[in-house]
Amino acid sequence: MPDAIELLKIRRSVKPREMSGPGPTASELDTILTIGARVPDHGKLTPWRFIVFEGDARARAGDIIARVFAKKNPSAPAADIEVEKRRLMDAPLVIAVVSFIRPHPKVPAWEQELSAGASAMNIVTAATALGYGANWLTGWFAFDRDVLDGLGLKADERLAGFIHIGTPAKPAEDRPRPVLSEIVTRF
Image (cartoon, rainbow, N blue to C red; front, side):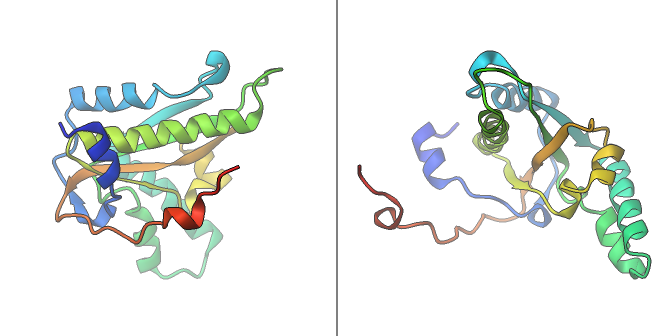
């Protein structure tokens, strides 16, 4: 396992289309999810949960996405519907981070949403530390209520995103990063 600081310095997102199997083992998945649940969580509210898509579950989710897309885009070509059907098929594992708010007098909704985001980032980092490629994505279907209902989310739940995890087919290219002098001020 790489040194934690070095890992954080070099972490990069890997495009799902540049991933293949194998994905994490059952033990590694437990580790990833355990780390995903180990985030700042004021009030111990656990305002997030996870949905694991692997194997045929990825295709079943894709069927839901494609059906909703076809219904909302009746003139869409079959090729476009097929693209939607394959949204979760590139990586062998996809973890959805579901966010919701638990009313609390001292913990605002924004803090709870940030906790879900921290959870998603921990999942990405844990997968990377285990040697896998990871990418946190959303897309139209992450915000579409019909898709969310089809995936089993409750009316008060939203998706923080889908985290695609797999073996990188090639080294991930870095992208330009912000120059600290342009984003840091001192008070």
